[in-house]
Length: 292
Image 1 (cartoon, rainbow, N blue to C red):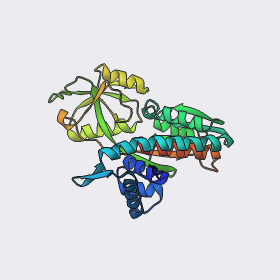
Image 2 (cartoon, rainbow, N blue to C red):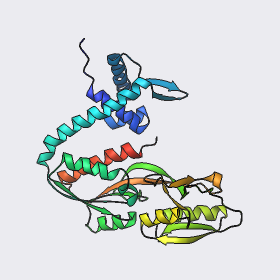
Image 3 (tube, one colour):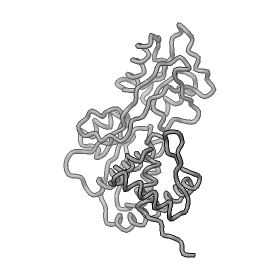
């Protein structure tokens, strides 16, 4: 029996739907209308002889067959893109100075940069891990070419990639018990820090007395201070160590706002190396930071 050749564009659309959480956002990503995307999914279902989606309340979720196809689609597309990049990437060279905060440097971005290096072996990527504000200061001074940062969406050079909810964090095993009338110990960055500002403003609004019990300039030492029980902190859920737990209103803590994740590039003409890195970081950020 002759097996059908699955449509690569349809597989890429399927992956985009799962990454972005909606058909409409996926259609925008792949540059097609929603009706065209729906037609692509119907074609896949016809080729495979199985439904890929099912209704779950108001949402549409993958069937068991759809889940299997999605896993294979990612592998097929990764191999396809690796083949294309290995040929095209050999002709791209240069240096890109890239800055990012520790929240992402300790989670998904190193692997993404490793994939980029394999695809573009002649491109040198110099990576700087700093606090968000310091990264953008370096970008403005011409010391960096590309920055992934949180909390600076109002800048004219900001390309919004995601909005992440902030969350309170405490040591694993804590009951998070905020005792009535007790002073809340916090583990914080030195000011200025938009996480610090957002957290203290929320506590002040809720009438909760707090004090900066542990203050640091390092994300690693911040995690260590929280794990040791020196104070609660707040970040996003991106890259949170497994030995910390999220806390919320059930623990007597006030709700927190979301924070924007944006990509910022240096002004002036972009080199081919910078263009390719920017595209790779954008794709990986959308994949890992999309609401799930």
